[in-house]
Length: 167
Ligand code: HEC
Image (cartoon, rainbow, N blue to C red):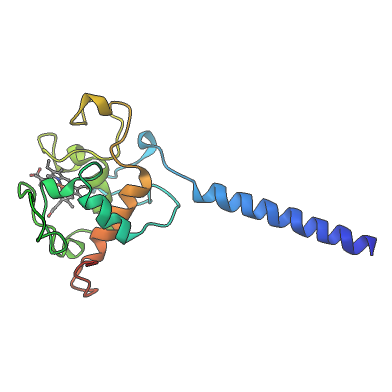
């Protein structure tokens, strides 16, 4: 009986450690200063171990206070919206043109990947001078998970997968 209780105790301690470790794992994030863009302008590792969600990605894409991608980009999901900008390329079927790793790099540091003259903001960098607003100094515009959500959303827009948007 005593032995059984001990075993139970050991089992619940193990479960606890497992759960805590699981949670720590869920919160693992690569800080902007540690993100590596390789020579082919790709970021091969997701910025966070948390699970991305393409539906949340669309929300971030549209939200004027977050990605505000629609200030410059259109695609079939947002074509009916008002005040769409068209300075940036249309992003229909972007998942066929660019890989997930390439999209991630463009979002993280557009200035490095597209050229320092691009009007597109760098969404996940802490490098001074890479931001549109002084107020954003030392902060990233999007969180690691928000970037991954948008990466998941845009890479899902591919003719190959037959997925033409979440609407
Ligand atoms: C202020 C305007 C602006 C905003 C805001 C903006 N972009 Fe861009 N983006 C551009 C421009 C312009 C280009 C084309 C490269 C260039 O000319 O600088 C571009 C290029 C891209 C590309 C590459 C497209 C291709 O066909 O190669 C992707 C992907 C992209 N943007 C995604 C996004 C996403 C996602 C957001 C929001 C999180 C966003 N952009 C916000 C202006 C913007």
